[in-house]
Image (cartoon, rainbow, N blue to C red; front, side, top):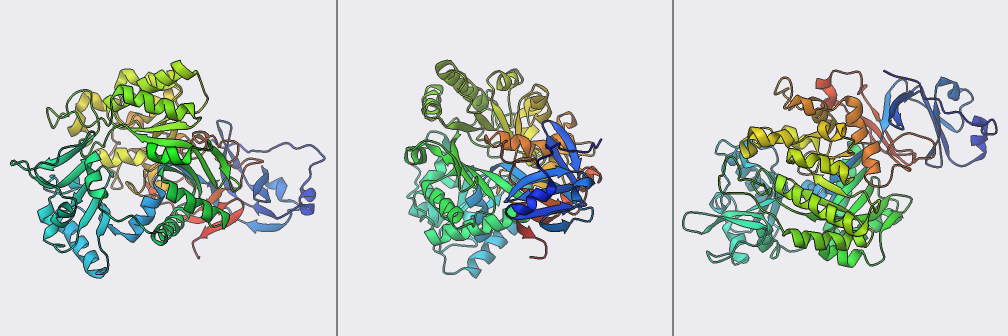
Length: 551
């Protein structure tokens, strides 16, 4: 399977010439993998000069090695992992707020919230995220009364694991002046009891009723959150992340960190919604800032909700909730208009679409853009592309739309997805291999903090379509699984392509930034069941180590 990568250089370029230049590091005895074009190749030696790859090749390059020589002693090296869809500040605030992700009962969730509230008596609001009622025996939405039992005196707001529903206590509803007469907004739903009273769960746009009364984070809190996120991302080998929804305030903090050389993970920022777009798009796209540490050339829009909260917009009603087709956030005309605005300004337009109706509406909007503006080469994307009607999948190729998909969603959703959409519609669900087979670029990510940020968990899900207990034994709809090579490419080269960055990152090749990870096992040789257990030994960005296990 392996073939040795040896770059041919003109005689005028020699290894000894490196010694006459700037900072040089030579890594020898590597068990290295990278991509050259579409081919997976191996290497043993890499030479880095001034943060970029100078040469990559076989053992012969180590003869007369220049600069600092680092012996990897056979350790495995991969290109830096790129997460094509995450929420950087969300990850940071998850580290600061109460985290109830993965807790498998309502009572245990409440116990965690109570302990956090008691440990933080100074907080005006108790905030957090991660609850998932499908993991609980009740398998029902929780209520404000549940939260009142553990935190009656302060407002509580907890985002569902997918970020598309909020659970609050009575104090929060009182502050937001929620009454029986409060209407469901466009693209949102208030969960109510038989008498029409709000029970404490607000879905999608209805969350705004609560968000409007929650104090905004201070600048100090935002910076703490970013510091926490950067530590976490470096520790799991993420050298670049596509941040799916950035505010103007957060963008200014990102630039400040980049100016101070503190941006240890590259961030490809998507402007979060049209209000932020009006403020941040005035000077056009920012293709590169601070030596490719930042970019701001895309915008993130939402078309529907999520499957778990039944907010994803479906063509036909939910199989387990007849009469409910989910929530479409706008009509076709409005999507056409909004996306024309962003595309006309030269911004890649990345739209969240989970349900088959949402995907169809957004594909129609992209077709409208193409008809009006022609092929702009902006590499527009649909984020998630989770449940797509089979007849709509070829349209991704026809319209040259990138499918930005998150492998962990499949293995997390498998316990409820078929219940939601049925055996027929699930054929167009989480269909990674189908997209690849038709030539669509698939950019892989995690959607952290909805899912864990560790990319090896995503690689494992992509290859096996199993949970960490090995279920189901042959994988969930295994025909859609990816090979190890395809999965790694989706987390490196293709993720870089989806950000217009394939010429500067994504692989360990001459002229690109020296972004790579050193891991404790050979990803291509260990049993597939062990992929999620791979550990990062070191993370390097632009030829500088930003994480090491002993640090």
